[in-house]
Every structure is written in C-alpha cells, then in structure tokens.
Length: 211
Ligand code: GLN
Image (cartoon, rainbow, N blue to C red):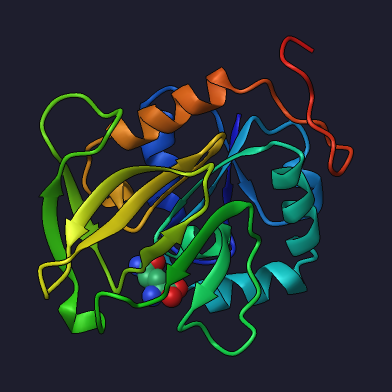
C-alpha cells in the first residue's frame, strides 16, 4: 500500500503510475492516512506550497517521524526538495520533511521557460535511457556519504548535475517519470519498498529485518 501525498501537485499521475505497476494506493491528506503504508510518494508541484499545506494539515511532523522511522519514500522534483535535509535557493527558512542527506538547489536549471526533456541512463533501471522531464527542476548540489547517485545530466554550461539519488528506502528524482508513461522508476521504487524491512510507527525506531 503506497500513499501519495495529496496536498498539491501531480498526485493523479503518480497514483496512476503506481497502480499500473501493481501497487495499491491511498491519498494522504491527514495523519490517520499514514497508518499502515508501506511507502509514500511526494509528488512534483511546488515545494513551498506543499510544505506549508503539510504544516497546516498537521502532517509535517508525522511525516518526518514516519520517514525517520523507516517509511520508504519517493520524491519527484518538488518531492525531492521535500525529502532533502538541506535546500539552497529556497524561500528563507524553507522547511522540509528531510531524511535524505543531500543539499538540493531549488529551480537550479532555470526558470519555467528553461524547462527541458532529456534521455538519461539511470542506475538500477534496465533497458533504454529514462526520458527525463525537467520542469523548473532542482538539482542535487551535494550528497552525504550514505547517498547513492543514480543519474546525472549536464547543465547548460556542460557540467554534470546529480538528478537522481537513493539513500536506503528514500529515492528522489529531479525529473517527473509520472508524466511520461515509462513506469520503470515507479517499479524501481516498489522494489525498494519490498526490500525494506518496514517501519515502526513509534518515532525514531526502525523495525529490524524480519520483524
Ligand atoms: N520549482 C518547484 C519547487 O521549487 C518544483 C517544480 C516541480 O516539481 N516541477 O517546488
């Protein structure tokens, strides 16, 4: 059972992609809807709006606790920003859910009109490159030691930028696979969820493997 944070953004598209790869889904708008989830998707949209709504719906701290306790999560674009421990070029003091030991640069590839699409190879995703749709997308400026880089793309100056990362049960992409009909990133996330030992709803406690 995978939740989709349903406060703002491309909720429907993620839900459709998840169901197409065999997940059951639940829209999450209040704390009770976190119970019993095996994973959660934080969609693309607008990170400041989403985090403000999460705070007003009383979801921000429960989400932090759930992720800290080991709930698997996948964030695309604004969702990546939400999962990041550190944000640059955010609004002053922009809070996040956190969990991923990365610094993310918001709107890094430029303004809305500088949005672009690019095929890119992604570690763990077999077959042809993934078609990346980048809409006023962030990139990952730096990663902590436990974070695996899964994909990079060159920025307008030709420098390689990190656009997909994983740290244990947490996955994030700067781009939007939910918009392309290519289901491999959602499949990848479901495999991450299946491989995880699960999470305890007691804040800060991870279930041990096989528990
Ligand atoms: N630029 C948006 C933000 O900062 C993210 C864009 C997106 O999710 N497509 O939240």
